[in-house]
Length: 326
Image (cartoon, rainbow, N blue to C red):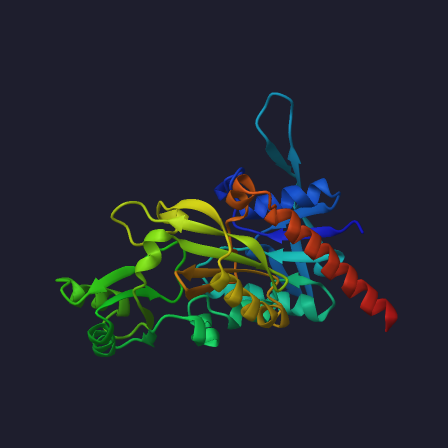
């Protein structure tokens, strides 16, 4: 089944051609003869109840002796229903434009377009708050805008991490201990004087061994996680914060968590998800644009992008078959 696949992305100029997970998926899709197009969230428009998208044809080009690059054709208007699959891969922050885009993609889905991940779940599964759905796997945590409550949580656990609910790449994450002289200013800044809700989590010292990214594809975990190892003097393992990515086989605990969580993700229409795990604890559920595929493929015999595109093909073919039988 040859498919027309649309990827909704950040501007292509901002993506690193050899490291970006979206581009890795697109490279495999092209190799399997699928037709690719790209668009941004501002290219969506609802006209008389139909979702229209200004999309550009996309193709990788490799010339002998030259670095790989890609060509992007002129944008043209399409109905969303003209695509066999739409892959929503816009990076956070989850702002109002992102929210509006999920509502518009809802309309496309109601008209029969297959959208991965499901737009309503992108809205409902906040990447920090989603650990509350699996609290049995999470470290002790508190969600609050009140500095007093967070201070009490610090007194109880002695060593905590605080982070915004809409961040990515390790931005604005602070570790606080009871002896920290900057507790007041950190909490004032993070909560905007008790008006912004944030998350506090008990600090998990195993972060020194890596913040593991476990990829779940259509409910099934990959055999390898990408452990993001912090640089010296840093408590964040995120690659965007300078962490070093090391592929590792899933531990028994990793597989236990991923296997338990996977079916719930699949039921919610969350086709590609990245679980963040520190030690034995789930710390985040990344549903917007999880990364790590390129690093895992480079270090193991596992090709996450290929597994993802094959799963996408199965999902679309199954949907076509189910509609034909009705």
